[in-house]
Image (cartoon, rainbow, N blue to C red; front, top):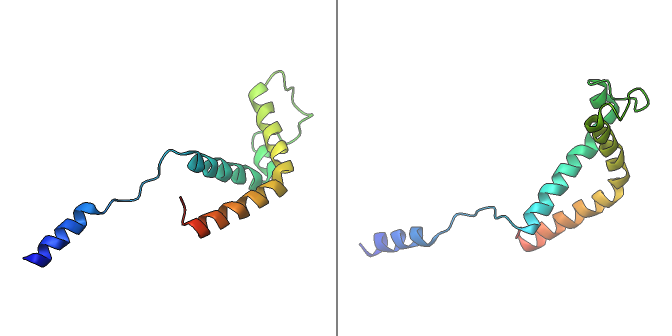
Length: 99
């Protein structure tokens, strides 16, 4: 009786971990999204939509596509800072247990 009472009390006090809406989680989501853009093979990905050659289409005619091409080109310059941010994020998660 006493054992079952303590088991039921321990179940009531345990809280399931949830992913909160915090700046840290937003940072991690942005980091993962930027990593995803970085590992795309830009030429092969854009070739499916005939956007692999930026000089072949008029950016004024397709502004959204021009911005996508520009974003994929700009992300390539973030390679080294992203590596550093990934290492710091992994260390932070390992040392502090993922806040």
